[in-house]
Length: 305
Ligand code: 13P
Ligand code: SF4
Image (cartoon, rainbow, N blue to C red; front, side):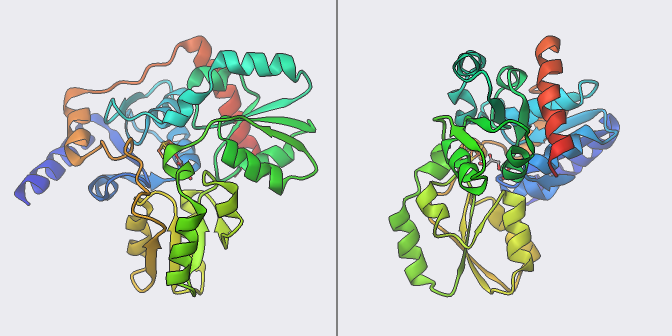
């Protein structure tokens, strides 16, 4: 529509004027992925934000992602395109919880999924994303590892790194954790030849049935390289945009229509425009917390890829 064209033109003009980049997660609305300069999983977006020469980052995702961008690039102005976009999982563990866990397990390393606040990251030894959690836990020298906050990713890591004692915390993602194994069996019966690719935030019994487990970017990459023609996708519906774009000849079925993260869907094209035009919603991180959280993120960037 003309509206979309006008908004797109204005966004592109403002972007040049402010030397801004638009960064979006794969769960964003199609129109947002379309306008973004870079779209990726949590790990790729962190890496990108640490290494580019823009003055302004407009983050289209959820709060912890924009906060990580600010931690990695304090000299840049970082806007979260929609202020309401939080990740409930990130609020399921606090810095005080980590301090308590450390007292209870003084020998353990604390590994913190990036879906967490800056305050929590500041109390941990190293961060990870769903793309490198196994690799990071394996690389640690400690035998005992506290994994926060996601119990499903933590249990998956425990199963992949049996030589360590991995103790998962009790957090979870509403969007991924609510999917049941009955739904999986039903859709697999409808498409017996399909490969099942799922995100490790799903429950263990679902991961057990999967042909592939990985981050959003890894799922997209896997389905693109695979010889299979049909896939059942076990993560948020937003990934279908990139999957279909890269693989117009393959068939993708979402595991269930309930696979929607409402927090990710607040952001629209006009949110991106407003972020640039009005300078909203700026992310700030207290410097003491930022420096300590940066330590955990930098350690992840050193250990994982
Ligand atoms: P990815 O790092 O796999 O993109 O996942 C982020 C996320 O929030 C999953 O729910
Ligand atoms: Fe958070 Fe789950 Fe949404 Fe990912 S899908 S941003 S973990 S609520």
